[in-house]
Structure formats: C-alpha cells, structure tokens
Image (tube, rainbow, N blue to C red; front, side, top):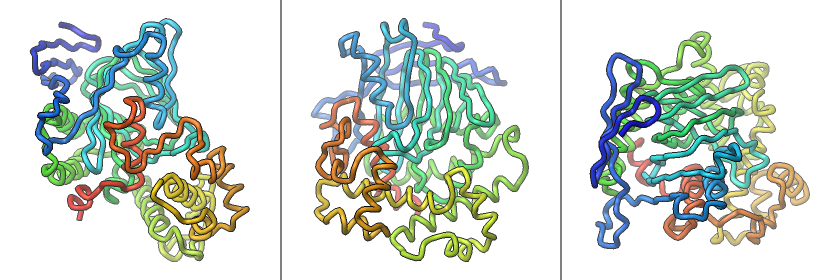
Length: 397
C-alpha cells in the first residue's frame, strides 16, 4: 500500500507498518497499532481509548460532526467537494495529565478560534507529528510548512490559520500547567517545526507512544508523564529561523513566571501591575510589553478570573451563589455579569442553568458517556481545569 507523502504500508490484523519518507538522512519505520478492542472483557487496568469515525454517520452529517469534534481548539472548513465525500477517524487516549490521539482526516482548512467565541477557551500546546500528507500554517508574523516525520508546535489561544491535505497524524496535547520548565521551552518553540536531530528524536518518541498506547496500564502513567516531560526538555528547542537571540528565551521565562504568579494569586484583591512588578523585579514598561499581546496586564488578569469562574459555574456540584463566586474573584455582581457576557457572549446564569447552546456539561463526565464528537473537547477542558491530574502531579513533583 502506498499513501500520500512518500509512505508505504503493510497492514496486518493487529497493526500497520508504515515507511515514512522524511526527506532526511534516514527514513522512519512506524508500526501503528490497529484500533484497540473496546470489549468489556478488556483489563480495567488498561488506559481507555475512545474511537470516532465519520464512516459510521450519514454522509450529510460527516463533516459537521468532525468539525464539532475539533471545535474546542480550531475551526475547520473545506470545499464543497471535500465535505461531500469526507472521511475522518480518531482514536483518543486520556493519559492523566496529557492527551494523545491518532487521526486520519480528509483535506481541511483550519483557523484558531478567538477566546470570546468559545464557551471554554483553551490554553494548551498541540504537538503534531505528520505521518502522511502536508500542512501549512500562517501566523501574524510568518508561515511554515510541515512534511511527514516532522513535529510541529501550535499554541492554542494564539492567532493562526492554515491548510492540511488528506493526512494521518499523531497529536499530543500539553496543558500549560503541566510543568513550568516545559512552558518556557514550548513558548520559545511556538509556531515552529522541530526539524533537527533532537526534534526527530521527539518524533520517534511520539511514534513509540503511538505503538504502545493501546497497551498502557493506568499505573504506568506517572512514569509516562515523567518521560514526556524529560523528552520535551531535552528535544524541543527554538527554531533559529524564528528566534532573534537569547532575549526571547528570557522573555518567555518572565512571561511564564508572571502567568504562574497570577494563577497562584488569582483571588488576591491586590493582584495587579504593582504586585507583578515587585515579584518579577522588572519595570512597568517591560511588564506591559510582556502582556501587550493579551491586551495588557489587567485584561489578562480579568480573562483568567473569568475563565476560572466559568469552570466553577459549569460544575454541577458547585452550589455557591453567583455573587459569591464573583466576589471571590474581585468582581461585584453587576460588573461580573457585564464582563462575563463580553468575554463569552452569554451570562453566568446561562452557564449555571446549563442553557448555553452546544455546551455539554463536561465536568466529571465519563468520556465514554459522551457523544463521540464531544470527547476531545471534554478531555482538553479537563486538562486545563486540572481534573484527574494526580498522575501528572506525581510525575513532576
């Protein structure tokens, strides 16, 4: 079998061996396991997987369901011809503190989604390894192409758009709070391809994870998360083409320190520019430069407080009054309601009542109980809010 992008494959009942022509000094041999069984007799100690295929849907519904699945991270579109005969499939693994997926997709265009248009804005990095096909990404400052065998880094919450051909890929989702050191490294490498020897080592790591994901046990997740952390720190470095000098690394480190400090002091009434300037030992001008892309220091603080309030309001087990939740985050009632509606386009009571359209109650939900198109969004939201991250905490402690 031959597929687009210089790949040759040999399929068996349990796996598919792929030959990836990377264009480098050595090609890759990849054995990708077949979709794991969902039998009830499978050991309960194994990490669960969740399969989704558009082939199981009416033709007219296939693209829209695929688009809904990825809506929490990007907006997908396509030509009429592509949407009329669209095929997509995904296997998703919840690895405790990170998410992992194997995806096959028809040709699509993609674009980032502004936070104010999302019911649950996300702030993760997506590390994507193409196994076949090609992609092009355009940001406000540059564009880059990616070919099979190369990992690319996309930060969610930033502005970008692009195109993907018929492709197969592995995706790794890393939440910003996974590790402070990782945040610094990935911020420096955002919107780049890891086309280096060390970058290809990370590609091999992702391939290995793809090979073994169906066999992973729950008690192995702490070791896996620790290994992922170490591999990112060792293999991911800023691409020189997009890095002016060491100042960018310093800038990223300062920004991450500021973000962590804001998150840790989110309920403090004194949180603001003066408090951050003292903590970081920097000038007001430099602090404002750090947060200029986010609309300023106060705008970023308000954004994080509103996100935090949103997650609490969406929790069906949270019984406090809306006013109590608002005051804990430094708002009075009327101010909170106005700011919340500006941020999300609907009111706090809409979230509390569950009346927000297309807003499933992810909190505490078993992924298996959700519709297939809702599972990715549920997992990504859990990673951001910190639900079920005990394995991650053990791995990085």
